[in-house]
Amino acid sequence: MTFRYITPGPADVTITGMDAYPPQVVAGDQVTLYIAVDNIGGSPADNVTVRPAAGRYGRAGVRRRRRRLDLLGRPRRRQRAAGLGVRAPRYEPAGLELVSPIWLVATVGAGTPDGTLSFTATVTTDSPESSTDNNTGQASTTYLAQGFISGRVWMDQDRDGQRDPDEPAVENGGDGVRSLLLMLEGLIYPAWDTPNAFVGHDGSYTQPLAPRRYFVRVNVSPALDYTTPNTGDEATDSDVVFTTRAYDGVTAESAVVDVVDGQHTVVDIGLVPAQP
Image 1 (cartoon, helix red, strand yellow):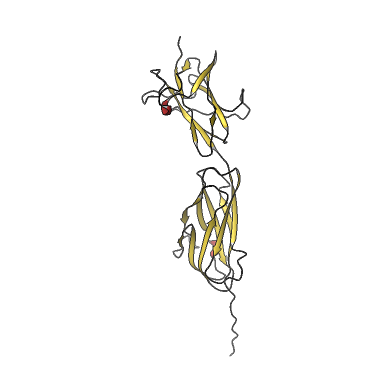
Image 2: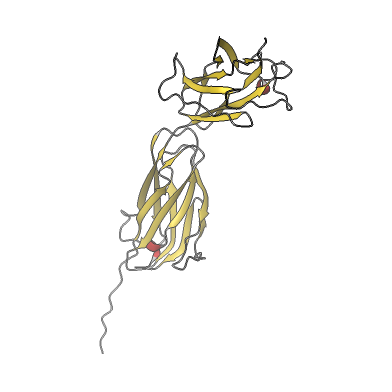
């Protein structure tokens, strides 16, 4: 009997697919990259490594790795961490690796510009390859730059301009805070999309905002007034100044403040009972 021996072709590792989730993120969110890798060549590929390359995502980086699962949902023990990537000792040719994608998790840092946030990954092997043109993959999500204005509203019972631990909170309601508007710098009247922050039972509020310059305009019950602003410790003082009193409420405004991507700007509001 005669056999014909055919020399198999070299390995050829490729990224057959790559996705990023969720479709929109803000600073501090995590993006999961799903990367499908296969060896479409004729020989085994040894020491296969998948690494993400820095895309347009600020100070982000791969924070943790999740091991690839086999077809029964069990971890594949032969995969191990490789710095900021994942490494497998061998990919057999025409294997089933593509049905078990690699998961890499990146944490997005503040300071990334609005818009498309791209991630690129590269697969390499120590074995000779027939081609390296298919060794990269790319996925993207959308980054939304966002900061916050937050603070506390409280009743300054001793009228010293400082929030003491035992002084009560003031919340939303007819007898308390009637509106708390986050106004863009330069506005005289609220726009149709001006946010109105909700003040909870503990007197706290947090409003996400696009990075711009804003000021707080707060209106409270006419039975109330505002304590002396900017007195004593900045961390526990009041940051709004009385502007107008009307039959249906009393208004105060803060100074214009910068809202920075990924950061909280604090504007606290101290109230006192109105004098008869």
